[in-house]
Image (cartoon, rainbow, N blue to C red; front, top):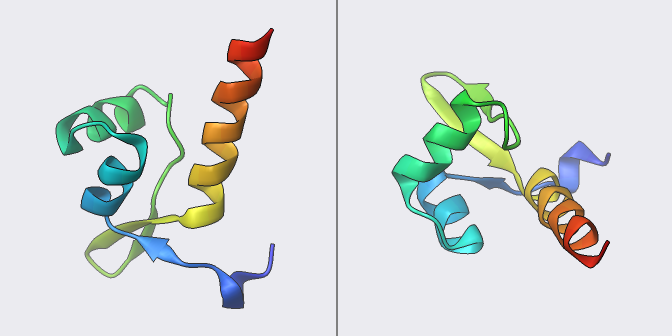
Length: 64
C-alpha cells in the first residue's frame, strides 16, 4: 500500500460513501464487521483503499 497517496476519511464521509448513518458505522466497527479506523491524535480516520476493499468484498459475496 502506498501510504503517501492514500486519502484519509472522516466517519461522516465514510457514512456518505457507504450510505449508512454515522451511528451504524460505529456499530459495525464495534462488531468488527467494518474496516477499523486509524488513530491520528484524538481523531479516527479511515483509509480510502480499506473502504474500497470492503465494498468490493461485499459485491463479491453478493455475486456468489
